[in-house]
Amino acid sequence: MTINGYEIKPGADLSGANLSRAHLSEADLSEADLSVADLSGADLSAANLNEANLSGAHLSGADLSLSVADLSGADLNAANLSGAHLSGADLNAANLSGAYLSGADLIVVDLRGANLSVADLSGADLSAANLNEANLSGAHLSGADLSLNEADLSGANLSVADLSGADLSGADLSSSILRKAYLRGAHLSGADLSGADLSGAYLSGADLSGANLSAANLSGANLSGANLSAANLSGANLSDANLKGVDLSGTYLSAAKPMSAGA
Image 1 (tube, rainbow, N blue to C red):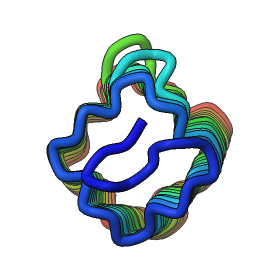
Image 2 (tube, rainbow, N blue to C red):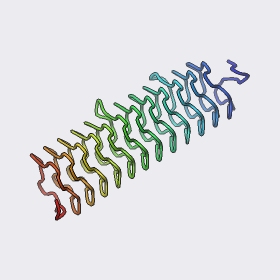
Image 3 (tube, helix red, strand yellow):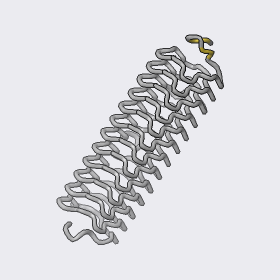
Image 4 (spheres, rainbow, N blue to C red):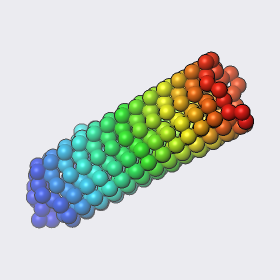
């Protein structure tokens, strides 16, 4: 298949190619070099992009949806995917560091082990996405939706990530790293944060009602005005945490380490 003079095939050199709005549905572009290519608005639904190099590519508004869209191991470093349709895609172990994914459709996407460090995911729909062991350090997730079917973020690195207002209700964040993460007003009701590292995190006004925070590290965290009603804080480290105005009604605090004097 040839589009705009470019041969579309596995391993093709398409670096810098102009494929804007191209119809590439079900195309086999595995191992292709698409670095800095313009794929904005392109139809890549069900395309095979396994191990393709998409670093710096422009994919804003592109359609990469359907469950067979294969981007596992793809290099999408700094790629522009804002508003892209990626629902059901396989991005397992993909490199998305510094990528622009604001407002992207990432419903039910497989992002296990993916590198999303410093990525812009603000306003993205990540509901039911699998982010097990993904690296989200420094990522911007303000207003992102990680709800439904208990999004899997277990073991994920979210240190310094911006999750203000994000919906993480019922999410699995067990053993995740959220050091100095910004979670102001985040929805974490019923979330599993057991064993999570939330040291120095900003959780002011967050909804943690019914959350499992057993053995979590909340040392130095700002929880002022947060809702911790019916939460499980057994064995949690609350040393130097700011708990001013926190709702602790029905909270389980067995064996929790000392709270700050101003709590």
